[in-house]
Image (tube, rainbow, N blue to C red; front, side, top):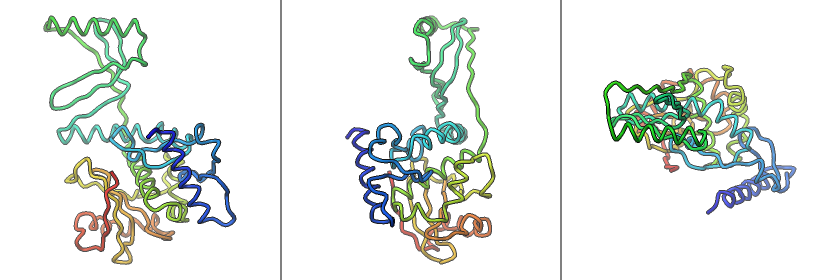
Length: 288
């Protein structure tokens, strides 16, 4: 199925859900869950995009429609930080990290591309669209010559863009978790007033509107873990938990307008729901 047909199908589902939910009716429109702006059918190709949760750079899949502005804003402000955070954790756990927008220089020849660092060493793959054709050809010729006649003392220079804002990386995961919950429960869940402060936080990521962020890391969890769970008892800890690899993100279950404000007071109990789930009433589904 093409991406375009997916966009149209999800638009239809969203418009039908809104028609059932809202009074007065919006008509044949889709509402972006991240900014709550509405879009008509003529804007599908230009203003709506398939959103990946988690971001595709760390293995996510398309899960919902958002507007192009929200998708682009996240990519530039949040998802790049998440990729760096993911790479750092991968290296610490003996895995493979992949860095984008890397520059290498061999014998004065510059090339841009992707660098993988892992247990088997380093692998650099130039990206054609990021390089001038003549410079790329020169780089490939130098690399081929080096591979055929290895010599000690040759030098290669690499510039790896390094980011370092764990809070923005956490916000990227929280944003992904919210989209997973929206895809699972629909507008009746995502439009509740409890998420107003989260929407503001995602649109102003450098402000500290929610502190602490409702996220916890369990390093014993596999990287490919993808789960969404409902905590229904005890009542004080009613919540939605979205698991993305080692990260567990906590969201309000229903109409809990003080959820983010009170999270710090209940954080230890929430974490216990992840580390000792037998003590809680849980309903768990995978979303991969």
